[in-house]
Length: 337
Image (cartoon, rainbow, N blue to C red):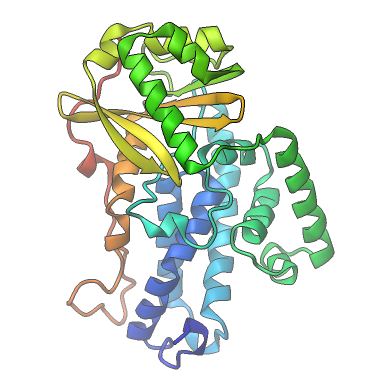
């Protein structure tokens, strides 16, 4: 039975059931608007607390109510996050999310999920991003999006149209998943061997390397531009690959690699590619973002109602959360050598 037609969602047990069913959509909305799994989880947590204390007997559509609450909260977080990211040291990249084991991120369409697309979406205002995501990734009607954002349907159509045009000017025609994986595997193999020629052959002429370390020593603090420079950076420190155990992973609907040192995850890397070759090489060194990726592997199991213990009737119940420090206890490598 669809949540909107369920007669039981006014009671707490029914509210839990409805929220569990809609949670993948809510997290998917928040993650696409924020580019941060941790921030998206906080938004979903707050929406859950509000849902418990809402007079649910007057809510006609839980899906609309919860999606609206998620969108508005995520926009508020995005507005403050933009200020915080201005102080971020070096390139900022989205937090990767494991879409192979976390259906919450990949729920609905795969639109606005790709790592490179999330980077482009950062250039939109939070309201523009919300309108685009709700329409393109979740197929909300323009009228409903307007109600969420306190705008007319005509304005929403214009905003979404401008956002599409903006993305079209910056977005390249990406390769399919199989070719993406082939290029990624070839890049890693060449980098491990220190094969400069093979690396350069895989890269587009205007390739860019972005390293997200927020000031960590040894991590490039500016984008590295050009085929030769990106290839050289990828093999500049022989021990970087020699000391690492490479794990093939899935993130944001595409292949990536997670590098481990001394048994501890230290680096996430993925690429974006077109017919010209690899045009973006993206490295995440920030330990909190690595922890967020690991957390995405177990997030979906940590939802309300999964315990056999009854939820309290009066006191708002927090969603169980997996904290970064619980998943990332071993010291990470902060130097590229």
